[in-house]
Length: 508
Image 1: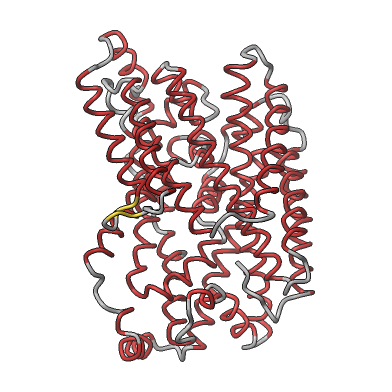
Image 2: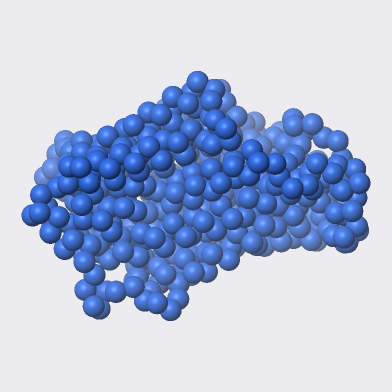
C-alpha cells in the first residue's frame, strides 16, 4: 500500500503516536496482576475467558485486515461486479467455522488444548502427522506475518506522505507490537483488536458515505454510467471467471478457518454459547465490511475512469484525499481511518506472532525438545522464538520478494491442507493417521508445485484447490482401505463424544 495522502503528514503522525501509546497502555493494564509469565493458558489464551464482545471483535479483526480496504477496493475497480465474490467467501469462512469450531471447543476445553496441533496429536497419535501439521501451519503463519510487515511499512509511509520511511515504519511498529503483546499476552491482543475493529468498521462506513457524496449520491446513475462506459465490468461473468469464483470460495473458506490464531480464539472463548453467538454475529460482517469496500471500488470506476493496474493500486489514497477535502469532519475521519488501517494490519500481525510463538514453545520445544519444561520456560522460549521470527522476516521484508497478492495466495495454498484433519477428524472415527499424513503431504506438494511453476490456476482452479481435493481423496479412500483398529476407533469416538450438558446450543 503506497497510497500517498496529501492531506495527512503531521496529523497522521499524531494519530499514529496516540495509537501506539494507547496500545502499550492496553497491554500494561490488561496484563497487570495476571500470571502471564507462569501459565501458557493465561498468556496464549487469555485464561480461556474471552467474553462475547471481546471474542466477536478479535475474530472480526482476525478475519479483516487493513488489506481488506486497500487491496479489495482496487480489485473491485479492476474487475467490476464480478468481484462480488469477496462477500460470500468471507461468509463461507463462518460456515466452515461452524462445521468444526463448537465441537473443537468442547474437546479443547476438556483436554486443555493450547495450540491447534494439540488436537492433531491427540486425535491421531502420530508424530509424523503432528510435525507435518506444525510445519504447514508455521509456513502459513510466517507467510502471513511477512505480508503484514510489508503492508505496515507501505501503510505508514503512505499515511505520513513519506515523512516516515518504509523501513523505519516497520521497525517502530514491531517494537510497539512486541511491547503490548509481552505485557498482556492474548488478553492485550484481543482488547487491541476490539479497539481497532470498531474504528475500522466506522471508518469504512464513512468512506463509503464520502464516496457516494462525491459520486452524486445516486447508485442508479452510477450503474448506468458504468454500463455505458465500461460494460465489461457490469456484465455476467464468463465461465472461467465463475469457476475461479468457486475455487476461491473453497480455498479461502477452508484456508482462513485454519488460521492457527483463529483456532486459538476458539479455545479462548468463555463458553461454547459465547463462541456460537460470536460466530452468528460474524456472519453479518461481510456485508458491512467487504460489501461496503466492494461498493467503494465500484463507485471509483465512475469517479476515476481509465486507471491502469499500477495506478488503481493507489485508488484508496486518491479517494481519501478527495473525501478529506469535503469538510473538516471528513478530513479527520480519513486520517483516523488510515490510522485504523495501520492498526488493523498490526492487529493481524500481533495475533500471528502470538500463535507462532505458542506453536514453537508448546508444540516443538514442549513436546519434543524438553517435555518436562515448565510453563514459565515455555513462555520465555515463545517470546525468544517470536524475536527470531520477526528478525528473519524483517530482513526479507526489507526487499519484498513479490506482490502482496502472490504472498496471499501461496499462504492459503499450503495452509488449507490441514483442513481434513479438523473437519473430517472431528466427525469420522475411521479417519486414520497415515492417510492424513500422505494426504497433507501430497496436497501441499501439488499446490506448491503448481504455484511455484507459474500455474497458480489451471482452468480457473487454484493449485491449492486441486491439492485439497487430492488431500481429501487420499484421507477418505486411504482410511476406508486401511482403517485404524477397532480399539483406536472407539477411542476416537469417545474423544469427540459430547456429553448432554456439552451439546451445542441451537439458538445463537
